[in-house]
Image 1 (cartoon, each protein chain N blue to C red):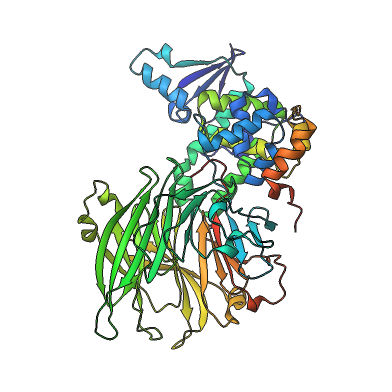
Image 2 (tube, one colour; image 1 turned 30 degrees about the vertical axis):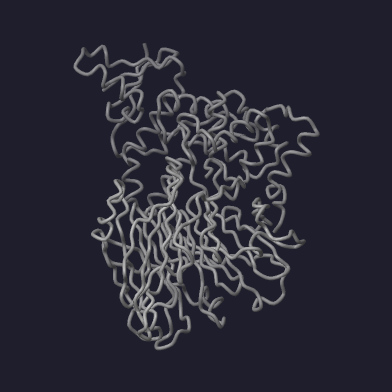
Length: 164
Length: 422
């Protein structure tokens, strides 16, 4: 059992095998192997308690259904179920999603990182550049001329997408 | 200090574990700006290609980020597989070229410009690259290779999305052969590619109906930018290298061998010959013959196409009606060990599109989980999804033609990738 401590000082006890899904934690545990029990406490100071909660839930779900098994032998029905669960898991508010991406990155959990990125990318699907700019709160620094000339001629097909 | 222990038993329901989100789940706005720049770009790689390209014009940071994928991938960047597109072109006026986006299930006008101006015939209105050349075509992941059929030495490799093209130099060796086939194999991880070319010459002889062929295998590696003649073999009774009938899969080269004079019989008149290319790394020429493996065909087929789908060797073949060359249906096999295992046959309602044509020849081209099968002389296109086990009729291409029968159509399947250049 290892203990994670979040930035707001809450403790989370997790089985080592479960937490190993984070490559960062796995490396830390590996480094400290054979030492005292106190060393099995890991500070995750850059994230608040809400995120470890979510991350651990994600770990548990995936621990019981590791991905390698998931792809090789999972029945279609089970795969659908996991997909549904993930959709629900990532159906969350902006801040959480944002923190999840950061946490998945710093704890190095590739599948969680990819899942969260996928969810955010869904928001940008089938949108014009203006809409994407609005959604992502990014100012367009292209001058009007640049926009008119350069991009459409380079990738004309993208702008003709209305073709049925 | 407060302790929290989460349940670890298998019986606990995960639905209960999901934290209840009281917050506003409306994601109509997501300030991606809050994330570090690499992560913003990472998110864009999860989009399908056309959406990513559209995002290029959102801000300069994104544009630079996306453009840099092609030349140098940032550390930790993982290329996301994209749903394949199918490119189709015709051979008669009015010329047109379209791409089918299988993610959005629609056709878009899509051109592959002729950048080879110096050698192109007098520029004419209403021509395309494909009206000027007849080509052997092979696609692998994000790259496509063309080889001119007339001279059998002028080749190009390009990314259809990024439109940058390179000429395969030096010119391909071997002269003009009786039969020629090419295949491209791209490794997305290392961004290296290999082009293999199989050429068959009939052995000159005074004997009538001479059935001996020299088969040459040439290999072009992007690493060394040069052609190597790997292997020459004399085949008795059959030849290799019909167009579209060789493929590289997991470092092995598979070539369909034809017995040319027994067509029409009920016995199989093809077989697959496989060579292990990994053995030739240290330029041991002799060893290629030693690695030769012959894979027999399950039955007589009218048309054979080999494909590499994510490391699986897939064969698409036309099953003729008993005792004739008329196409009955199309079936797909997978190579398991040394045997071809039938996976599926096109159902009647799907194949009826092909059957009423005079010419039963078709081409097959696939990527990821999807195989596209197109009849040469019609724009009918069907697809088979290996993951979902579903046959589909693709909506008709919007070619500006009225009479399909007078036209010749062709095409290929490719993965629309922004992160690979030849």
